[in-house]
Length: 262
Image (cartoon, rainbow, N blue to C red; front, side, top):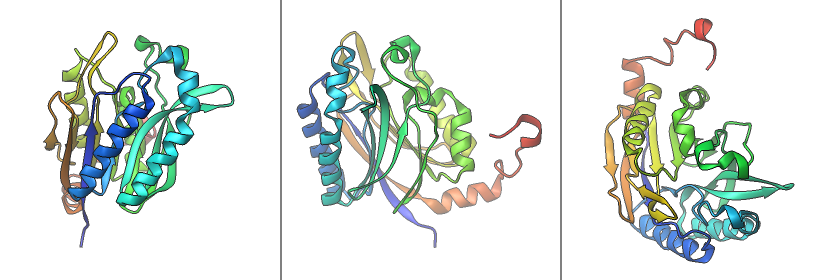
């Protein structure tokens, strides 16, 4: 029998540079979704501090402690959780998504595509590897925010066996229509589930619209947030994905010999 899981998003107003405040908000929310039966919980991008560029080195230096406390929460709640933090490594700062499986760190992904419009490429280093993480809930492909505009990455994750793609984000107004359209497109074209967690509220000059969502392989929006702080939970039925892939075999019908892989 194909499995079913309860997936969730945590959408909150990230306070720029305020690690302890953000950590408390995330921890409380993770406990709440776990009590609602969630097994997978995705947090927003850079959820511990936001894009506080002026203090990013100092903030990134505290990420190991944030990660340790996050892992402890996941151990206590039995959650699989994904979200990104600033990672300091050999003088470089990466926007790194961590995959935690009930307390155990099972994967990390450094954001491949840096959003030059928001000066990410001036303050952050880019990763150079995609990630499909093996977890107790299945294979999770990981992407972060601006990666959504690059379908090649999502196709690579699908070809490498991803069943769910988790996407932490800080996606601001006025580009919410792109967010809505691209998330559904990535789910439909790759025939997999997507869990996309955006933040909400105002950080400096940026207004974040929320609209976090959980999407089926057929492109059905199973749960959609508004613009306020919230948590959403929805059921993922893997039988739906398997039936859809058998009915329309787009992954099998690909012409990689013509346009390359992925």
